[in-house]
Image 1 (cartoon, rainbow, N blue to C red):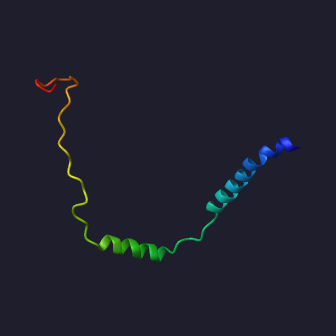
Image 2: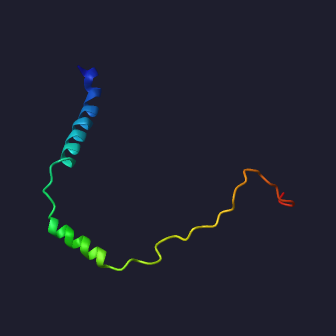
Length: 73
């Protein structure tokens, strides 16, 4: 019977994981549709933010050929 004691920690971890996943997947109450519409409407009324996009960087076109520059040694 002592030889089966190594099964206890994995069994406990499995049971805890099953309880955790079942708690995460529980049925939740329906969200308030009017509150969601109000929040979306207020977000859409705000002016768009400027300056959040990163300007595109200029990349050298690759030819696939390695070229050594003179004096780069």
